[in-house]
Image (cartoon, rainbow, N blue to C red; front, side, top):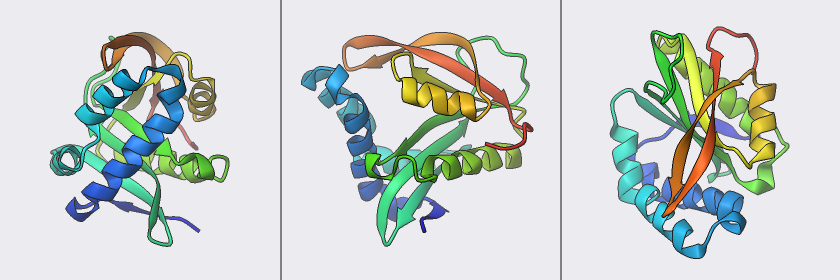
Length: 175
């Protein structure tokens, strides 16, 4: 059974490897190798993960099984790129699970952790951006109570891609 815990600095190298692995396994077939390399180099190195772990108003959590990382999330206090009626929004910036663990409840548990962290932080709203051409993720977030509220551009390397901004109230029961 996986365990879930807050990341610390010693986790940065393994978290960077998992972050890059899960991003590539999700999006590589839809992007050029150059754009994937640019994106992963800009966002998933060990030093970058260490810096993110230390950021104020940010929490990174890891799903772990027998010492191996199988998923992670990152939430932070941040306003959305679209106008939403909220006073204390949190962003679910990342929620990735190794493909071998899809369908086994890891993503749902990570979502429950994200909502718990947002509630503890006093958030009234949690939002995220999800690639418009990722039906699996869109369906998962809808199942978790998120609804579309707009869109924004998410660059992958040199390719500006369309993300759907999804939002839900934090106090909504269940995930």
